[in-house]
Length: 201
Image: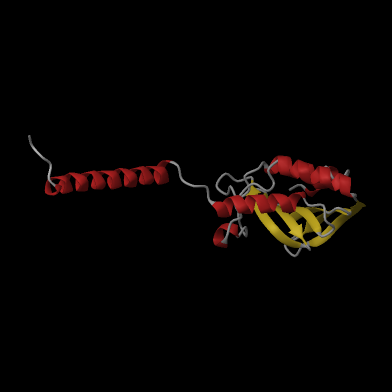
């Protein structure tokens, strides 16, 4: 009857260990390739910006700035809507130095502001990764179209700023619909639509 000696078992055990290690390494590699872990920085940015957007504290605000086509200074137009828990301000501008043409300032209240920011959130105003460096430089972008900049503010400082344009080659960082978001902002000021029409952007 044949007997297994320790010297015969050692190579067999080594082969089993090597095979087990190789299988574990392949499984780990497959997980990394096919099931990557979510980017925690991205998730954290989205969650934080959404909380900031939905806050109704007195130091909070939301703003859209719409820039017209790049033309001569005398003909350049833009407008801005800023909404806070206490005020709604709509301003139109002439030229690149932002000389005010018309300003409409109205009061606001917390329940109205809350409904508004929740509507913005559901229209994905906070969705998108804020661009950095050259990708966040909108100077000269979409020269023949319109550029939209959406900002979540705290103490008049941007917590998050995303942009979009009407030009196909300058998509921007906003992942939501700039048309729907702009309509929500403009609807906060009853006569704003008529004033914007006169700007002929």
